[in-house]
Image (tube, rainbow, N blue to C red):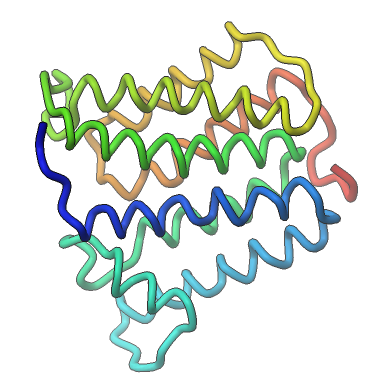
Length: 210
């Protein structure tokens, strides 16, 4: 077993907060409340990202605190991961039905968190196409994503096909494992999850009601 640095645990704590605090908003509030909250955070994290890129000197509430506690070594002049997560979730909540939004949120936050922690803790064989990631990490991503998808359907009282949800979880695990900049999976994973859910179930896009 490997040791996980304290900073990485703090980072992952910040990473799962949207999944914990955002889910009740998606499930229990009117859509306009959800959109108000998610776009508020999307704007904050966009400002934080632009501030770092352009060298602006003002402090962005909440986003500045999370940057100081969770930014990676390659984020000295950007906050791309959090920016992409919040903007992507804002788009998803605006465009897609509620089940797609909740599924995307939980797969992205919980799947990525446990994938990274278990992958670092256990180690083991590396993925052939991405030596930075482990097979056990991707397997964890698949298992947690599948659990998150089942949970989102049960919370909303919806029937589901285990095989179909397994396919979506597999797609999320594959996309997360790709040899691209790590921040980009904050877009690819939640958006693909929401899109696949919608393609399977249909439902109106950009609907006033969920």
